[in-house]
Image (cartoon, rainbow, N blue to C red; front, side, top):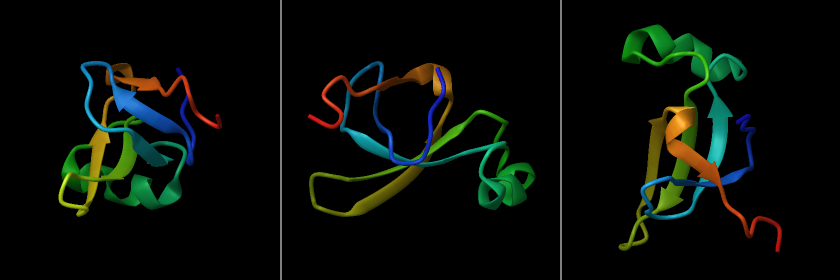
Length: 73
């Protein structure tokens, strides 16, 4: 599945809805950091707010994510 910035995704195992901020191999900003932190092309950078309203940023393998079915509804 292809993801792009702005997509709303969720882990296949559940959890909060997250917004895609970039994809390694597509977003040059992430490409500069990939070797330093062990990212691979196709990994998906996301951000979301946790239960205490704190902004959380993370990166997941694309195979662990689904696009939200209600996106844009």
